[in-house]
Image (cartoon, rainbow, N blue to C red; front, side):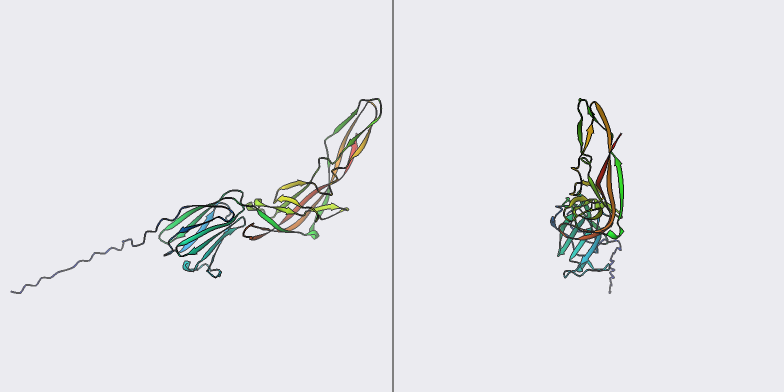
Length: 303
C-alpha cells in the first residue's frame, strides 16, 4: 500500500509590522555662549529628511542650506548633500556644520539683550527629534554707516518758557544777579527707524549728528554721540551755548521776577544706516528719520 502524506506550510504575515528603526536619543539641551559658542552632538544621518528651526525672538528668521563647496541649495534639496546650515535674523546668526554623524552648532552672534531660545527639529518622516538650544546674550549690534538726506530735511524754530524765577535785593545799595539761561538745557537726538521692529532696540553706536552752526544745519563731523535706535539721547555739543550768562540789575529793597525764553532750533532729516552683527559682520539696512533739537538762543522776560 502506498501512502502519500501532504504537508501544507502556512506563512503568516502582517502589513502592520513596524520595521522603522528606533533612533538613538538626540542631546536635547544645548547651551551656547552668545559670541562664538559651539557644541558638537551626535545624530542619525540615515533617513533624515529635513532640519528646521524656531526661536522666541524673530519670526522672520531665515534658514539657508549649503554644500561643502559653499553652493546654496534649493528647497527641493536632499539632506545628504547638505554640509552647512545658516539660521539668521538681524540680531543673531547660528550655523550648523554637518559631517558624518556629527552636528556642530555654533552661535556666531546673539545681539539680543536676553538669552535666545532656539528649537532645532530633525525630521525623519515617521518621527521627529528636537533639541532645545539656549544662547546667552552677547555684544550689541553696531551702526556701521549712516547717511543723511539733506535735500529732504525740514527745519523749524521752537520756543519754550522756563518756570518763573525770583531775585531779591534786601540791601540799601544796587546790586546785580547773574543768570545762566541755558545752564540746564541739552541738545537731543533721536534716530527713529521706519518701520520700527523690536530687534532694532539692540542696535547701538557712535555717530555724527546734525548741528546748527552759522544760522544753518550741517553735519557735525568733529564730534560723535552714543545712541540707541529709537531712544531720545541728551548730549552737549560744542555749539550748545550752555555757559552763556546775562547780568540783571537789582535796585535796593527790590524783588525781580523773570522767566527765560529758550529758543531751540529743530531739524528732521531722513537717514539710511547700515547695522552689523559684531562677529559675523552680517549687515542690515535701516531707513528712518533723525530728529535733533538744539538750544540756540534765549530772551530774559522781566515782569
